[in-house]
Length: 382
Image (cartoon, rainbow, N blue to C red):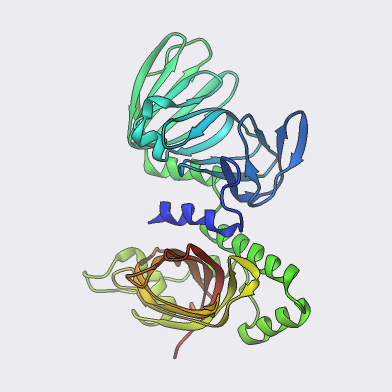
């Protein structure tokens, strides 16, 4: 489901995939070199073939391509789209990367893995439907396979790297034999490359609110109305402060990694009710009378509920299904009415006693192909 959440970022643009991919997450500064021009990278900006993307100091960036391949870059990294084609008759992807990166292969890597190639400064990587994490410098590449299997080639030889293994390729040398690597090391490397879940939520909220504000008739009044009805947004360090509390003793059937959340909230089954805001297809067509209900099971780590609103001259009502919550309070759920409405959502619980839930969602009406994009803000019910 986490991968689906990443892919749902595609829906937050009113012109989906105008190029071959889009920037779906950005922290700090990045530039796109295109036809001898340097363009400042922005959220939802389209990526084109032959583009060269460079990230600055303390910066991170994520791109989702048309086949759902996901490329994430850490600071001071460079990524080039050498060639890319995804059609009914032909598929291929040839990428070049320097610096910190993570690659999750999409449909091309599954249906035609021989047509997906990722080049680093010292090697060429072939995939078998997988996730690759790496750091490529002029003198050495460190390549990790966190799922699936990869084939790493250099000018002196090749090696196979399976899930949970790492190889090192020094300039002009054969890749070292793959060795197992601890999950903690993998997670630490990912933190240097990817935005945190909460950073992504905050970023998407800001983009949607800014988009609505630019187009509504009375932006100041509308924003103030939302602020008055929802209250102040939560500070970014609330979860960090709350996690320091000691865990409680729970029964064996409960997930032990959720003990701290149960301590904070004081119950295994908190419920949340709140409002949603957003638009359908165009920012002028805003969501009205929107509400959300979330039922969280902190014993089993499950989330369900419902969401509904009016827009597009119609009622949008659907269930929140197959949801989950992790030990940091990050929510991840599907949305469906078991007919024509399908989508995804994610969010965070926060506050001293987890009294708030906020996040983003996207829903598609598969009958008329209309798309709803929005944010939600809910409070815990007593």
